[in-house]
Image (cartoon, rainbow, N blue to C red; front, side):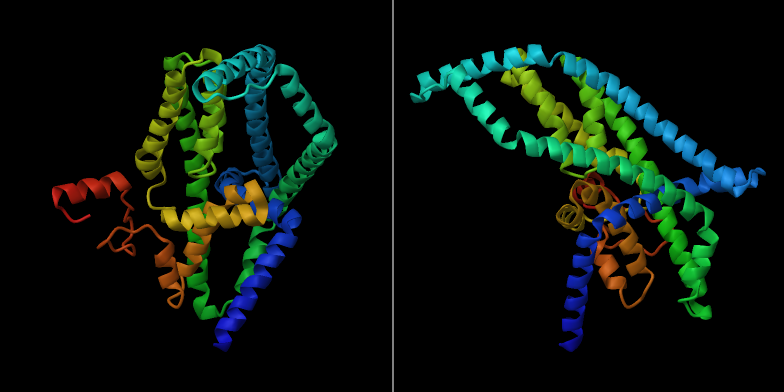
Length: 369
């Protein structure tokens, strides 16, 4: 009973610390994940005769180039979308009036006049416009500051990686250092597999979304496809947010609920393919977290750190699972977080977590899953 009380007290203190120190911890965690991703490239540069400092600088320049390319590509699409907003606003008001007229005929609804809508909108903006502006400026300033911190942290983590490893070994008994080294290598493998696999999945999902939206003749199909694929970094929830905007724009643009439903259908089909075929094929069993644990991680991540917490929740949960699996005392908790099929020995090297479709097909055939 006393041990459980101390455990609960420790958990509360940990959550409180994570919440209070979010401004410090978030850039550090992002830096650690990106450092693990850049580590093989940095080692490759060093093996080819480039000094560690210059190898790290080259890795950072490549990372910055990728970020700049994404921002420029996405920004050009955003500029085109912004240029169409006045036309979209006119069509939105027409759609609003049509919907009100339909509701008046069908349900005896009293329509709002255009002046009432404008007055209510202006009143809301007057009350909250200043706070929105201040929040936007704070978020922008904070994002730029955190981005600079991330690059500094990445440089330091890659530069002093051997020193940090020796520091961690000093907490481990000599006879257990081999096991600790294996755990650290497993964490590195899991994080690298997750991030690199996620980037591949985002690219594939963006292409599939674009094909589907272009086939339906949706305006700004490429913009919406990239927007939704980037939101896929938030499991389960991101795709729903990404599908809402193009569906609304299509509904306003065409006035056809069927076509808007078709847009939602495209995203649902792509999400189905991504969850059951694309992601399992790319990441395999490297990040095998069951859906319940993933959803709880998303909720906790959002409660602690907001959207960044949701992005970090799955890789952090995967790291926690590796740590739990490495200790016999905590291995059952690691098994609880995992997504291992019934009857499969997850300790076998190379074992791969089958996806939902594979298990369902095995059950339909009567074969063991």
